[in-house]
Length: 138
Length: 138
Image (cartoon, rainbow over all chains, first blue to last red; front, side):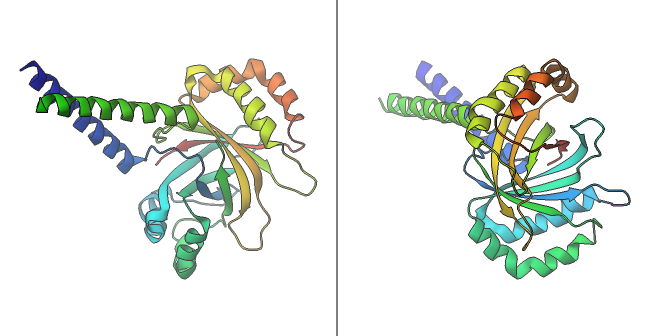
């Protein structure tokens, strides 16, 4: 009887753990980043430049993520707040980051869709992004 | 008897899960980033500019992380590989990122140590970083 109790508790506890992990994944995906390739799309801030975060988050990024398939481990979006260097202007208004396993696969997936991706830029910004490909070393 | 077997298996499985999660945390910290503040320290690439990744990873970043206490959720380091825009130079050689809960607490922790942090720059690079404070929105 005691065993049954412990067993039910353990089963309950493990389902709960599985459930919370699933939820996290759906939202923002808690995965270790070390060893992954990052493609960071940085939108510079400047006088007269605009950025529609709502469109970017609900339309543009999901579209690009859809092209990447299982090579995409997760993606994140951030909103620039300030420069960390006193008396310097905000460097970037927004950043979109794709965490991928293979750069070659990423390039092969993006190439046939590059026209659609570029055509969508005008729907949310009037600035050309800086794009950095990097490797997470820690 | 059967219950005992299932029970041992479950206990074993959950210890193993706990162990792998702990390991991940120690290495690179798998945490959900949404809602956190990011302080990204970006080192621009240019002709004649240098960056000692080994010193940065083993000395500089651990020193700064040590100043931040429990406000620091995790930090990551990345190595710039290429520009994602064809025919453009590499934008950044390296990036160090602190994921923090409170910007005010970060500033209060850095202020009394800023001289030590700046003095250490010369030990690994000859380029002034761009620093972006941003909020992870997704």
